[in-house]
Image (cartoon, rainbow, N blue to C red; front, top):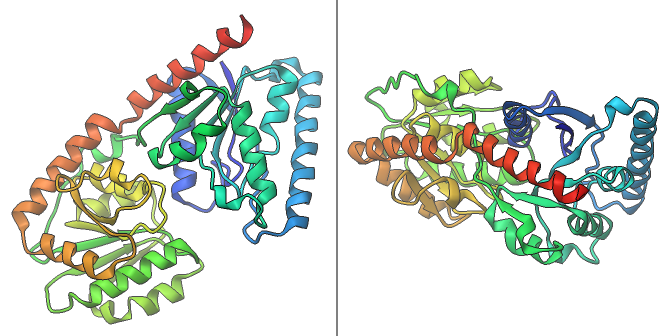
Length: 368
């Protein structure tokens, strides 16, 4: 089928890397692997991070105009008509102002992957975005739930409970299958994350505080990532400066190699949906210490592939890192389990089959 793909937060071909962009690309790859033609319907970014009502009104107007433009393009060139609209990552700061209008006008299924509803945003400066998400979910023929923590908020807004389709986060595991795990004598910790204000910077603060409590132990830190908050992150990690290596922005292949040379992935994961980097680390056979937030517990198996700690608790995070630093056998066992569980549960092949079955079932249901 021909699928119109739209990511209102960040299009999959955006130049700035992130976990969100990564998952958008993976969804496109999974759909392509199932034999579907996926086209980026729009690169319009609807995000308003400040709760600015006038900006939201302008974004809505722009989105509605783009929907009309899309429909006019289909009218002129019927071959461009999609069989299904697929929106990735829907939440109150970045609603979909295009997809529901197009789906209604063309009479095609409307599908969302990864949606969240925060009831406290009703009546807030983001109430317009919140209400738009609720309307989009009421229109949705299926909502693919990559984060089980979203289910409770989303389910009341669906026409039927069965329209929630749980799916495990996934990766193309090819780059991680033949890595050389070259581990040295001094344990290497790796923090793979972008550097930007907000939750990422908050996670770096917890990480810095935790590691400052472990300076009496031998370890080295590798930081893979970059971004506008680089200076703040360097300040936060200043107590660890003599034992820190900064890789900057890296490609997927470079990150895989860096992970393969590491002993523990350390990331506090404040407000992470599930943490793409945590999944990548485990695919490389690296155990994880992370904050137990969102869907992280669905990716990291507590006491099997890593250790999860209360979100934002630097003391408990430091204790968990110390536990693995002091037990090489446990690190190895966790790493082997991480790789096995990732292979069993988080490969793109299984995701592609599930997506194909979910979307294909909607077409006869809509045209019967």
